[in-house]
Amino acid sequence: MAKHPKHPQFPPPLSTALAWLAAPPAADPLRDLNPLRKHLTALAALGIPPLQHLKLLELFQERADLVAAALKSLLLDATLPVAKHLRIVAIGLANVHESLTAGYLACLREIPPASLHNLPRCEADLAAAGLTNLSQQFEIVHLVSAPLTSDFWLRACAVFGSAGTDPAPGAHAARLQMKSLLALAAVQPEGFAPRELAFLASYLRLQGAAVEIREASAAHYSGDFWLDPLHGKDPAAGVRLPPTPDATLFYSCAALSRVAGQHLYRLEQGARPEDLGLPPEASAMDNRHALALAAERWLKPRRRQNPRRAHGHRVQLCTRIETLWSGTDDAAATVSDWMIVNEGPGGYAVMHVAGELAGIVAGSAVGMRSAPDKPWGLCVVRWAHSENPEHIEFGLELLAAQAEPVRIARRDAAAAQLPALLLPALPALQRGEALLLAKGCFSPGRFTLIEAGNGRVRVAECSSGSLVLHTACIELFEFVRDFSAT
Image (cartoon, rainbow, N blue to C red; front, side, top):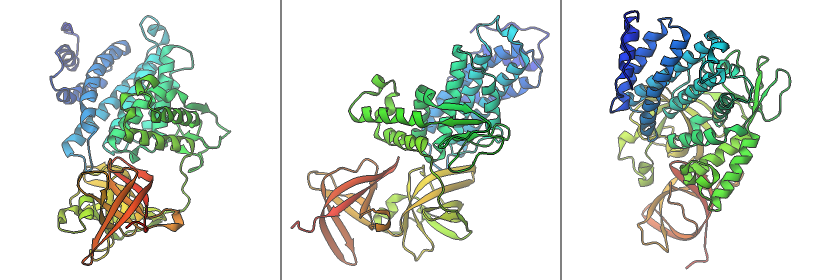
């Protein structure tokens, strides 16, 4: 990039920013994050003429995109609690995207449309750039389970409203970005592991056009999601929360759900993702399961059947499934103290109080007990939320009030026995006996179940049934015992 000449009329912060932009990017893009934030903050207060401001935003955008690409590769394997330095970098980058959005929105408000006609861009192009940054901000904060800023959706609606409805490519790009953002919000992104969430974001960048946005102030369509731009409320499903009087943006993901279903069917039949216009990672089983869950939520948003009761009593969690498989409490570091915030018929919301924990993502299995002398119940982490590095909340779905550590051996495999947890049958949920294994260990067919306890070893020949739960960490399947086997 050619160096910018120094002009004496430039304020010192602008001269410094131009010199930094003229220099080559850092070998490690993450090293550019701090100067990027500093220069954006300094320039925002200078009152630079809008056309010059726009050119600077485009130069800063190049650096921000390099930082984002480097950081996302690290966040894909992030677990809770996220390392403090990594969380700080992620929030810093989210703030950069927020600042860039604010800059594009300011240009939209200050640059006369006639002035843009002399440039290779239009109002819709600026709106698309702003929404792209908002999408990046949304994805990054959810990759570290952090909250969005309170004015996020108000800003998104303001940028989207400036895109217009003309058929220009910029307007199409802006609508696609907004639709993809709304669809990602609709799946409850806090319930997906980082790699699953990144895949869904990539999928929506290609397929989000199937979302139908309806701007209406009176009619509410059954099954729709809604957004209140005036008060900046998060998107919500109408079946879960009635729309507010000021809700003017409704959208449906039903068509998107059907498109996803067709893609899943083709992938199961062996089609290559690239032949379907999908990201290469669509072939991974974890991502197919994530897409299937998203498609279900797009079509039939979950409604809350029962009110949740507030609580304040303590429980213990075992966040390492290996400890539960072993059936011992030898590793005290795996047990931590939590407070139940509220509970419903199917699970709990819990807040971390004390104790070490590591390696948790949405989809992890954890043990929960009310006291050290009580048996471990088994839960799966359905969502995770972290207001700050010292604060973590989980949404837990109860799988079983008690689980027994067992081992299984496949008759046609030479591999070692696999650790598992035996869950009792739940007739009320029409679920038979089930086994929980680590992800990737389930295989249909016959196997031997080995139960050891109270000085006895019991062996049973079994046949696997349907896979009833698949997450980024575990697999849960039903089975039946063959009492006729000798």
